[in-house]
Image (cartoon, one colour):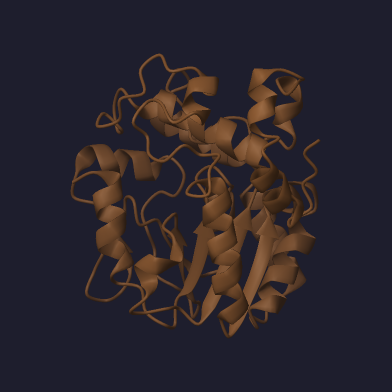
Length: 274
């Protein structure tokens, strides 16, 4: 079973009481998920978790997938009186039958999210994502939809469509929140406290600060290196804010990000692409 097939199967198990975390790939779900687990909540990764009859995530039977999961989370644990958060990369139409009452939209600057997802696909294509044909595809080619990863990311069916659709879905949800990756990195305790308050979850500030400290990039990267080895491709690659400044210039590559529909959608979240 591929990761996408498992995701589609697990999506059918979402219930109204879940908190659906809609996040385009490489937008910081691993970071947010670790913080939520540290706060006593359950965070389901639908690509790798096996949902049991108890509604809790269990280690996948497949050894390769289990090893991948252990890089950032270790063995799954149940809630300590907490909520079930469900990570999701699918558009809202996959939840037409059961729409969760609570939606969190986790967003990251598209320049960083798309570059980071490209690096992830390239790193894991030889092993876990062997069904992808990305090979020696350049980042520019990736943006144009080459490599059989899916829809070209800078289209109304890619990053733009995903965020537009979930913004609308969040508007109609009884409770919703938008969280920016950049805020999780630059003011983590405040960002998490604001999220918990928006979701109506009473959380002590001291508990948030402990969860944030235990979810630092340094700690999560060290754990992954211990499990996978320093030379392996990393899920926790760099964790930087505004990494795009290292490659974004005034050329064909950056022109892709100046598409009007992308500029307009990114501006809704405070990202200025000029």
